[in-house]
Image (cartoon, rainbow, N blue to C red; front, side, top):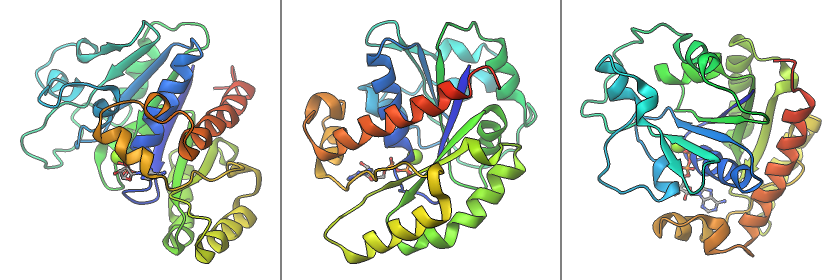
Length: 252
Ligand SMILES: Nc1ncnc2c1ncn2[C@@H]1O[C@H](COP(=O)(O)OP(=O)(O)O)[C@@H](O)[C@H]1O
Ligand SMILES: [Mg+2]
């Protein structure tokens, strides 16, 4: 089973938006998808129209000694299962009483369907759930924003992922928030492309107001603005990733 960890070199690069988009696009291709939110902000669910005040999630179920998968929601038809993080009252790092490989072991136990993909929305560095996600994943997609900071953070991000045991060829990258009118965005893209070669998605995701509007309306971008630039970019990214995940199938 392909388990893709989506993370950013820093906050705000679009990891949650892209994780939700990939899950939705693959669902619409009739693929079974499990989307799991490992972030305490608990935002992934809002991309799927879940009620604002719904606080249930895997974390509180696990902490209560219950079956965490009972927090799963079926989204749309039966192809997409969403596991929200759930509301947390106190945002303190309490360590991982379950051990760093808890998630990897749990996902390995789940019933697998042919062609299934798991998409993990990872939190920022330094949060314990990030390590859980990296240990469970067999591929990673690192989101970079089109700004010089991404170049500065690249090496650190890659070192972290390699240290989690992911081989370099399974660490993939994509640029987000790209504005073609800004010279610097183009320069950053060029530099990243030179450094990352074929591991960087061929097309960046453009900064597009439709992304924020769709989120505000709690509607999938692909329904709210199917013809938008970002919707098109995300569809291209999903296809590019599909080829890579399928090529490695069976090896993980
Ligand atoms: N391509 C884009 N164009 C415009 N806004 C975007 C784009 N991608 C993400 N956003 C917005 O940027 C903000 C951060 O995105 P988010 O996915 O939450 O990032 P992260 O999970 O990496 O912190 C959100 O308000 C989101 O709607
Ligand atoms: Mg996020």
